[in-house]
Image 1 (cartoon, rainbow, N blue to C red):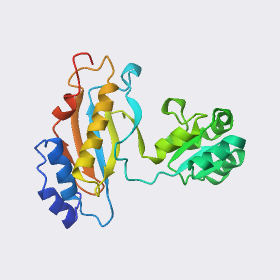
Image 2 (cartoon, rainbow, N blue to C red):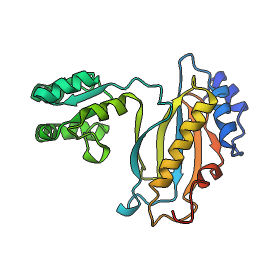
Image 3 (spheres, rainbow, N blue to C red):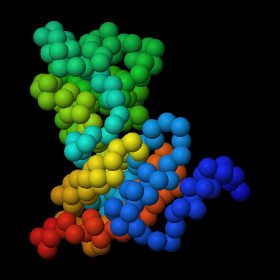
Image 4 (tube, rainbow, N blue to C red):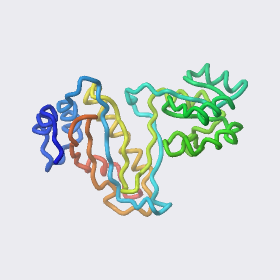
Length: 238
């Protein structure tokens, strides 16, 4: 049996595990239940009524939250020549070409949060796909991280863009802020995510699209959220 600390047990007493709170109550309770000495992340889990084994029901995407995530994103860019200069000017933390590919391949260097590559570098970057891929760090045209427009993508990533993809259980996990955010900021970020998931709703997905929603801080118990707030964004045309 898992042994929980006193602080966790105290936090659990504030939360009714059988009750689904409205979104305002949930984010306020998330802040109240947080007890760690550091600024915990605010995390959400959306269980969708999709079967990710079917290609037409795969839900994935990215968005920049209204209030960011509160995290300092370390951006690595694979680029050469003028594009490398552009990446540095745009605020990339690490920039390099073949020598950076070699460093990752030979030394296992992975001290970054997201990788971007110009199209001409992808032949070389593909050599380390076995390293980057399993860690979700491989640049991908679908997510906009393979591009020649480095200014925009670096600005988005630094602003707190989040990427998400439904897992095998039909759940999307993502961070939507920090405990230090105001309740209004957390609520607005969470609503933005729900609206984006509605926009990405597969045509073949059956209703109710949102099966369940929960939020939690890094250390606290989960808090059920009434899915109705998210379902309100679904129209008859969706």
